Image 1 (tube, one colour):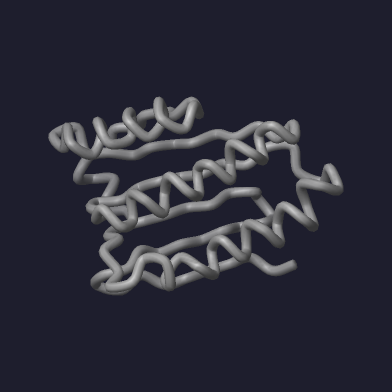
Image 2 (cartoon, one colour; image 1 turned 180 degrees about the vertical axis):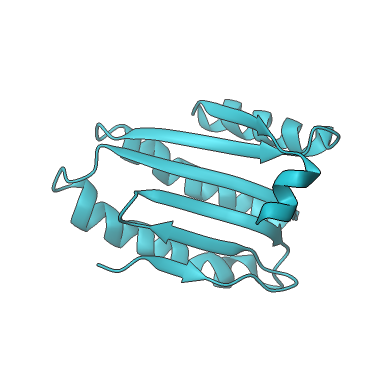
Length: 137
């Protein structure tokens, strides 16, 4: 099984599911014209990952890094669906770590993470990032 890598565009995020490190990252902007279609390969990959790695007890922790600068309502809906999958995986005995990165001046982005965490009943780590952090990437 190979890792999943989707390059960022003006309207879509960089997505990297590094199976060697059991880390899934979402970076930059997510406002695709068709969010369901854009994220379909991610859902399919997670299903395959669950079938091959989770059910066979190869993975005991999965780290999800969410570092959006902006995401639209359609993406928010998709993220709820993805997080619901991770909640199901957690019930199979896998530790789920969700890191929610936000700029300290972007209270809306922080609040959206808090709302998602509460709604989906997963613990999020809220990590403030500075402009210097953004330049390093």
